[in-house]
Image (cartoon, rainbow, N blue to C red; front, side, top):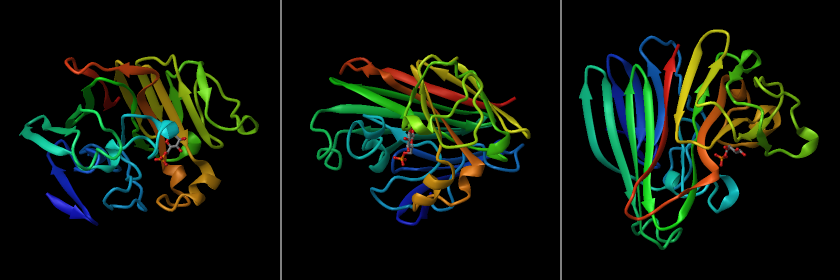
Amino acid sequence: QSIYGELPILVINHKTCCAAVALQGAHLLFWQPSTEQTPVVWLSNKTNFKKAVAIRGGVPVCWPWFGQLGNPSHGFARIVEWKLDSCEEDENGVDLVLSLTNNQQTESYCNKPFSVSLNLHLGKTCEVSLSCSADFDVTSALHTYFGVDNIDSVIVKGLGEVYQERLADENKPATVGELTFNQEVDRIYTNANNQITVTDGTRTIQLTNTNVSDVVTWNPWINKAKSMADFGDDEYKSMVCVEAGCITKPLKLSPNKKSTYGFKIELI
Ligand code: BG6
């Protein structure tokens, strides 16, 4: 365990990968398999490591709402401290389980009981799965920031062609099908394949989603990057978010049964 800024962090150095996880938000900060020269799961150089402030990059856990459906943006789970339930290591990597239940720090956001847990496998592959139970419905996303060599060469495949545009009409990017980037992109794809690839001309990352209804793609591009204090002006060139989520079909939770969704990342 280590401390970055104000936050306790679990640092993982395994023969298969290096990675780090913040207890705040059960937030995977970065993941770099030992075969790679650069992180596959990317963290901003400008991120805050402050209590109750969202971390920029990694895999933010958006729960129990996505985006501006409530306040704070993307839900409170990413800005409160989770509990580490277990940490086990074998030759394939490190497996962690973190959990969050309603407590003093969550009661100002939600006055009902709930239980959320996040399972992480960090090795040659990165596997993340979120389980939750409560007596209310939630929207959620595992908001992965992928590291790319150069956004100009990035092609995301497998998204399908049906999406909700989150930008004002006049900014609407024209691309459909395979997604490339030459301006700000912010979309919720509602009929994507379970398997999605992100190619940047140097490597291909395969994302396999389980039980998700939506895939969000986001790159802030030049002006939005400049407007974000916790994001470097040029960092939009080296990242793309491809997020597994349950947004247009919220998770219908029940107190006695766990709902689970997640993803696996591998290099192909
Ligand atoms: C994406 C949203 O998932 O997250 C974008 O689609 C948003 O609209 C982005 O700008 C970053 O959100 P935040 O709250 O971490 O700045």
